[in-house]
Amino acid sequence: MLCAPLHEDYLGFTIIDTQIFMAGNRTRGTADILAEDEEGELWLLDLKLTKDIESDPKFNPFSWKDINSIDPTQMVYYQTLYSSMNDETPRCGYLIFDYTEHLRVRFYEVVITEEKQAELFERVDRALDVADGLDGSEDLAIPSKGECDKCVVQCSRRFDSRKIIRKKATF
Image 1 (cartoon, rainbow, N blue to C red):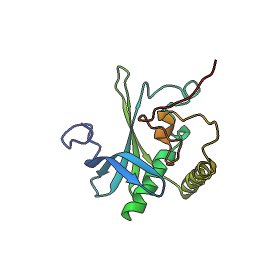
Image 2: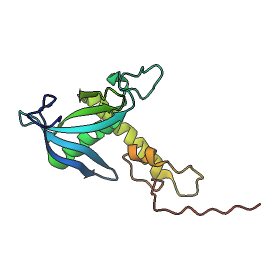
Image 3: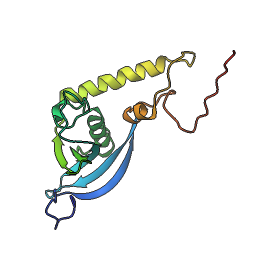
Image 4: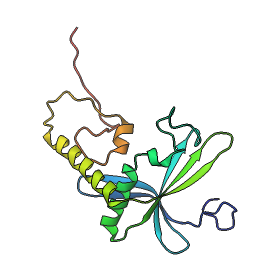
């Protein structure tokens, strides 16, 4: 519907690829959609599902109603990683779907400033510094799958569902 030219809700995108895996130096990510608009410009589109697009951000910190309250780290990183691998900087957007009885859809273009990009690199550098300083003897919590899915750093503590965790308990 959103990418079908004859549909009334057509957004003007032609899907080029989905689940685009990108890898950099100790970082990686998988963007949802690579698309082209009617002017031939490339776009990275990130799909988001929420219970209710109209939920109030005062009561729901993960609300998509106020796009300016959302942390765009993932999108900033995807754009930067794609650009470094392809010598082309795509435009970016969120396609947000809710699953109320209204089945609302919103599209937001995400304009990434140099300031946000610098902030992202600072956060990634700090995370890499912490990961590099770990020697394995620390009794740190293993991050959840959800935490690791949002993190771009490849570290020894990264969630891996294939690991068997062995611990000894003495009673």
